[in-house]
Length: 370
Ligand code: F6R
Ligand code: MG
Ligand code: MG
Image (tube, rainbow, N blue to C red; front, side, top):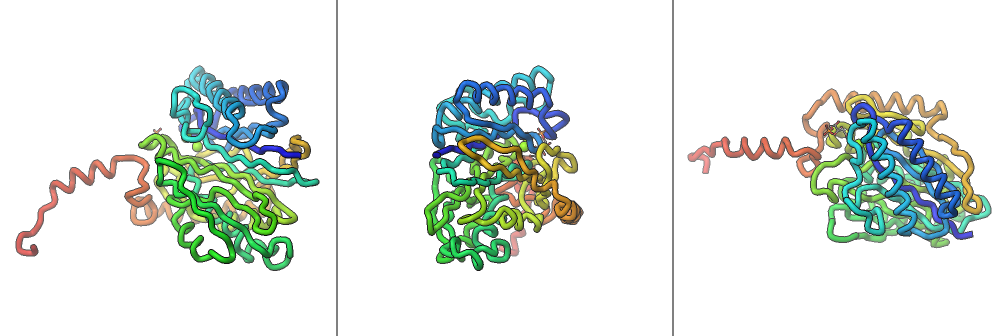
């Protein structure tokens, strides 16, 4: 059966600062999704949150970029915004950057990752949802899971996977239109590394298996900064990854997250911290962070979802959380110097730029050194 998996997420308001949506907001989102299941628009759906972002996981038969599905998500976020406003929550409607819905949430603020698949007899997949980070957070773990035998032992051991994978990479700085490049591993391995080393500029949009042509993964690629022209919160991306058989195993997909890699995000979207793997529905705290990522596993059958397995709940990840804390504290100890804070082109607030202009006027050129 052909089924579409859609994850659409948005920050529409939060208790405290940018910490978590209220229970009333989540309840309203549940009601909207349940109504859409009852009406037949959705086959199934789930509502979760990660930090201050609410994510709707929806299954349906309408394909990707379907305007009814996107409208459902948009309207749901309008409803959660109403609740946030009525409760006086912070940042109510933060990610709803346009006044009127125009057929698709892309470019309007909410993030979306969608994939139409022909369901396999058993169809396991993972949903990743992050807060206080940009879509480039997936560069390291997705590339490693699909291209590196360090994590994906199947590339050496499983004949099904030996032909490797194709990556579609988006240049997220090109705001006029989608600008993408398609590269394959193993052939284009170094070219891929050349792009992915800059995760604020080039991000993985899709992964496709070479042997079968089946799509394995999709990530949201929106950059709120690029849509709004100013800082309106980090992008807080989501991704869907299929697992097992011709794809990496679930554990191979999770393996790279044990690095607790550094990414740009955290406080004011402008600091490098280590990604902390967390359980679903986790909150934000230290330094408006740390950057967090949840991973939920499901099987989908004729569009119906199982309950989730919350991967980062397993005790193994306790040590990784501690490692992420220590790595983040080490970086934070350096405050605003060098790599601790974002480089000039990625600073999400304008204060430094404005000050530099003022200070530049006060610089004096020593005449005799000309
Ligand atoms: C980062 C984030 C927070 C805010 C910070 C200031 O993505 O959401 O670190 O940038 O709390 O928020 P405002 O500008 O809303 O006062
Ligand atoms: Mg926010
Ligand atoms: Mg957020």
